[in-house]
Image 1 (cartoon, rainbow, N blue to C red):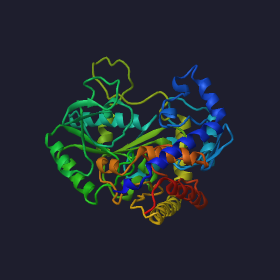
Image 2: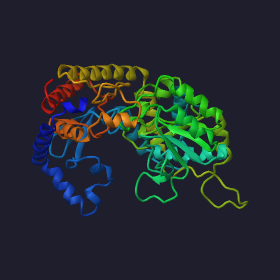
Image 3: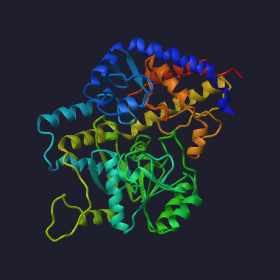
Image 4: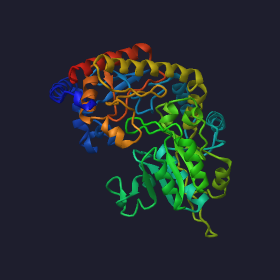
Length: 457
């Protein structure tokens, strides 16, 4: 087995020495975290800022392009792009200009601006869905779409795939499988997951069986899974799945919060998929928090007929709960327009594609030189570390080609050499700000790590 080539004794020894070095060289960050504990759980304003990492939290100071500098003066090449939320790079000029200009003229009115028309028309043209709404995060977009699906179909249940992550709202944080309804995480009501069905990805028989009950309102999925390494659909999976879903009277929603960074117009556009709705998020990679969702004309008609502000209605009728006071603010719409019109061009995506090829081919060359039967997947600018000879088709396959201790050791090893990889289950990715030299630096450090943590052939 490929995992047998991991030198566990060397990995554990390396992890210990790298943790010591990290602590020795990040004293200011350690000091700030201790100060933060007086007013914030774990010393950070959002739990992920410490929960994602097994080494102490870094406190950044400034970021430009693909690099950021921390309060201890260390400079890092970011190879996870703030989990896609920064794939335009730090402080992209068009976004910074739009923020400055719009903030100086008023940031939020609870009223639309002309920028909203330009941004949504751009999204409609590149993604292929005619009507759009903006929210605060992809979690909110998915929640609103699920409510719309229930109104549209008269059904309750949501079908998703193992390995999913569609946000932190109740409708997507449970599962119903062979053991019955249960929550994915603590703190949820005991009945919160009764509306969910979770099946393996790329499993057409399970999909057909789940749809046969006739109670699925919508299927919610990424076009390919991205939260457990990356998992491609089989060549015929989505063409067959789309037909089954429509025959069953359900809706198909694609969550492209991650995958819209993989291609111009997202994978829906690249692969010619035909969903009823699409979610895009991560502030379109601008670093500014917002999300949006597009929908078909049929869904938009139902949306218009069932959407009102959350206030008492004298005739007793109800409406779908959507919206938020700061959603689609003047500031957000200015940033969305700038990102779409000035940054997210087909030419820039093509440049990132070339960098992605350089990254994936470089990793596979490292593996080959070490005689490791490993793979580096490739989609757009993103690659990864698959510690096995075949790309995974589902989460079981993916788990068999991962070693989390190895991944977390790689993270601190990279950090001590000026490279930042935020997530242990996501591979490196090239952003709009990366260069060939950046990719080559990542590969240089990667090869050093591989040599030090694997046994010779």
